[in-house]
Image 1 (tube, helix red, strand yellow):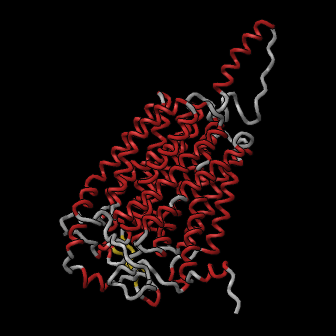
Image 2 (cartoon, rainbow, N blue to C red; image 1 turned 90 degrees about the vertical axis):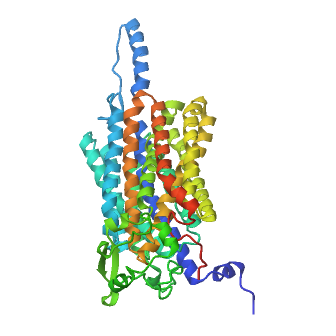
Image 3 (cartoon, rainbow, N blue to C red; image 1 turned 60 degrees about the vertical axis):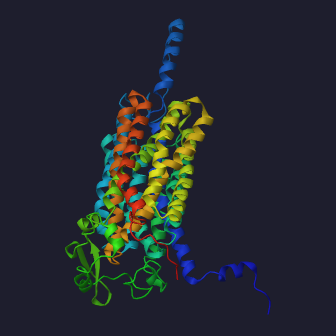
Length: 533
C-alpha cells in the first residue's frame, strides 16, 4: 500500500472537530475585520475633506503679490465639488469640531446601541442577526461615500449616516464573541483570543490602505468599496456561520471544566429547577473570594429570563441587572472606557496628526498610521500569552497601562523629530495601548460571561460582552470628541488628555489586581486551565 502524500497526512492528522474550530476561528476573524475595515475610511478622508486651506493661503499671498506687479488677476480653478478649503461644510475654520462631531455621532450611537445589542442578540439566532448588521452597515458606509458622487454638502446627511451606521454595527461584537466562546474553552483563551483579536488591527490596516488608494482622487470610493466588502461578508456569514458545535455534532470544550454539565455536546441549558435547588447551596471558598460582597452575592433567579428551547425546555438568558452583578464586570467595563478612549482617539485622529506634524499628504499619512495597528497585533497577542501563563488578566492589563502612560508622553515629544522617530513610537504605542483593550474585550469578556456564579448559563456571554464593550464605547465616543476640541489649542493637550485617561484606566484595575494577588484567579473567575477533550 502506497504511503499517503504529505499534504493528505497533514489534513487527516486533525480531527473533524479541530477543522470546524479552525474554520469558525478564521470566519469570525474575517467577519469582524470587515467591520473595522469600514470604520477606518473616515479618519483617512479627514485630511482630504479639509485639504487646501494652508497650501492655498500661502499661494494666495504669492499670487496676490505677483498679480499686483503684473496688474492682471486670473481666476483660480478649483477641483469639482470642492472649495478653497476642501469639501463643504468642512471647509471652514471650525472643521476640526465638525469632523469630531462625525466621530462622536458614530461612536455615541455605537455605545448606546451596544447595551441593547447584547440583550437582543442572545434572543435571536446569531447568524441572522449578524448578517442583517453586516448588510445594513455596508449600505450606510457606502451611503456616506455617495455624498461625493451626488455633491451632497449637508452636514446633517453625514451625521445621520454615521448615527445609523453606528447602531447597526453593534450587531457585530456580541455575536462574534459569543460564537467564538461557544467553540473554544478557557484553557488557552488568552492566546487564542489574543491572536483572534488582531482582526481589529488587520481591519484597520486594510481599511487604511483601501481608503488611501482613492482618497486623493475620488474619496467617495474610500467608503463605497469598504461598504461593498462588508455587505459581501454579510452574505458569507449567512451561508457559512455555525453558531454552536452541537449544530454540526461537534464536541463542545466550553463546558469541560463544569461539573454541572451532562456531557460535552450540551448547549449549556439552565433549567428553572436548577436555579431553585442551587440558589441556597453554600459557596465554595474560591467562590467566596470571587464575589465582591464578601461572598454573599449571586445571580438571583429574578435576573434570569427563560427562553423557549428545543423539546420544550427553557434556556436561560441573563438580564442586564444580573450581568452587572457578576464580579469584575463593572471594574473591567470602566477600565475599558478609558482604554478605548485612548485607542479610538488614535484610530480617528492619528492620520490627521501625522499630516500636521510630519507634513505628509492624506494617502501617505494613512499608510504610516497602519504601523500603530501593526504594533497592536503584537500587543494583543503578547497580552494574551502573558495572562494565560500568569492566570492574571487584571495584572497583565495594569502592567501594560502603566507602561503606556510614559510612552504616550514620549510619543508627543519625539514624534516631532522626524519620520524615523514617529515610526518607532507608533509601533511601541500601538502595542501598549491595544494590548489591554484587546484582552478586556475578548478573553476577559468571555471569562466573565462564563463565570462560575452563572452556573453554566452561556447565554449571559452576549449580554456581558455588550455591557463591557458598550461602556468602553462611551470612552470611544468621548476620545475623538475631546481630541477635536483640544487639537486647535495644540496637539500636546490631546496627549495630556490621553495620559490622564490611561491613568484612570489603571486606577479602576487596582482593586482587581489586589484580588488577583491575594486570591489567584479571582478577577475573572475560574481561570484554571483544563485539558480539552
